[in-house]
Length: 301
Image (cartoon, rainbow, N blue to C red; front, side, top):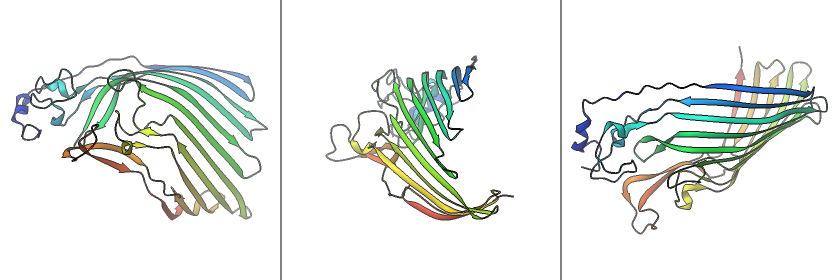
């Protein structure tokens, strides 16, 4: 019963107790921009964000003197402070430029960012409950957005993201945050053409998203708890009224039926005989959406 938070009588020690939190923080944003020319603008900014702390409500977040936990100090018995997590404070900096060329047919936007996150609130699923923990995180990277209209009716857009978002402390120091790929590349194109003059037009759309490999959760775990690099492909084709009130289309997402996972966790109290030394527990994952297609009718009033 010591392993079961519902049956563990040790947890009755916190019955009738209460805890409170009071927090005050100054937040704000400062931005500067300068128009170099009618087609280019440079900018820089700073912002300070705040998310209040709180308490995990599930009693399984309490420590037990009989069961090892990750909460310091280890195994000092259940206390309401075991349920508490700290506020999150972010100091964020950004700089870049926005530009257009060829009478607006070409758009190029580039920005770099740096974020220092103190006590990042990471929501971890432990197999039976969610627990919010704190860790310091550093994040920096570059974003690039482009748009091209080579001919009337055809718009091609693309995006690139490079981000390093790593923990600054603990056993997983230097590791990228879970489900945060280092590189993401996107591209999409839409071609719209007239069918019935001034009333109905047709359209064809395609999109692709590629991301580099990712860890689903923190730590050095088996390969099936990670995603290798993968891409998903989507498309849509249809007709619509030129006033945007009605549209009929056929669509598909993840057309290549790429298999990937969106999260993973160790299932508590279910051991695997002969498992590798890195884990002796059953592991479960939530898969991403498979190939999906359909027909859609839209009407706006």
